[in-house]
Image 1 (cartoon, rainbow, N blue to C red):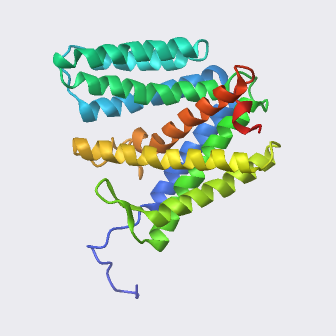
Image 2 (cartoon, rainbow, N blue to C red):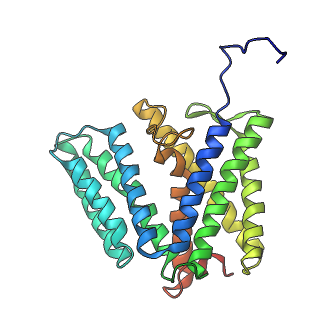
Image 3 (cartoon, rainbow, N blue to C red):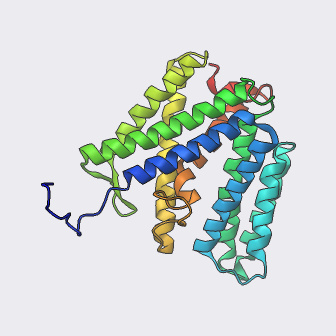
Length: 286
């Protein structure tokens, strides 16, 4: 723009600097908690799960059953934190309450939505704690590497999709649900995730392989689907952002929608392949 020419007030300002600043702060907090592990990590994950459910409740409520929302918030926070000792028990508690809410849908047609929110908020949190596992703060364990791997894949997919989509444009991925997402962005995100994930696997000593690339692709696609699911959910309830908690990103749900699905997929793969022994190694050791 030439000197002295006023900026067009109709042209929206880019939110990229604000998004980058917020993302760096969140990445630093998440990385520190992952490295420390233990109760610190479990506590942060439990709080995050509670914030996700709080935003879900704000979108899908109010509920006629008295204190159902508050009781659900307490349940999800306690269950996710307790997963550090008994993940199966935490899963069972969330599943049982969610099922009861589904059955009580005739009394309050919104209660099934609350039950779904319990699962949506709690399951990824439990998955994250299962992947991290035990280990002294700062000690490099399979759990620390596995969780770092998932974060790197999802962040790379999200960042590459954002920049490629904005630069290349083209046909929309699902215009009715998310008008800004493009096929070019989705493919760019997939390529970026595979590149970053393989580099991380090689750096961590597990090695880059076709099998690891396939895992990365699955996590990246799952991340995209999680993003689209949240977009569809917000469109269903007529909201633009799940909240305004995070500058440039909206709410916690807006930030972790893709990560939530990727964490669950990663935990399922790890548990299925490890046979209950050194669970996290099942994700990268092929």
